[in-house]
Length: 114
Ligand code: 5GP
Image 1 (cartoon, helix red, strand yellow):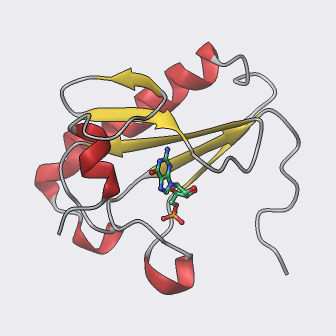
Image 2 (cartoon, protein in one colour; image 1 turned 90 degrees about the vertical axis):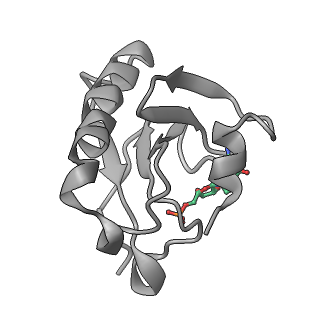
């Protein structure tokens, strides 16, 4: 099932794209939770982490190499940052196209709200 992210990949709706290659795309979150908040997504339509298969490993590995590259480009690599992948209801997932959040630019505090 396609989501809004498929429309961003297809350039049918605008996004502030910071990186793109044959496997992944990265763009700024529309409602940022930190000074740097970028979503890194596989171009393949993978709904959740529960749907990950061995055939996705190249794209999912690419999410990390692109995260490191963007963190460097954004100047937040040394201070540090957080990568988050939410899954389903308890994880707080809202868009059912697997994506990695790259968050940084300030101290992010404890990992989870109590
Ligand atoms: P989730 O809660 O599914 O892990 O995160 C979905 C994220 O996608 C949210 O942080 C939300 O702000 C972002 N988002 C939802 N719709 C759009 C959109 O149309 N454009 C962009 N750039 N981000 C979006």
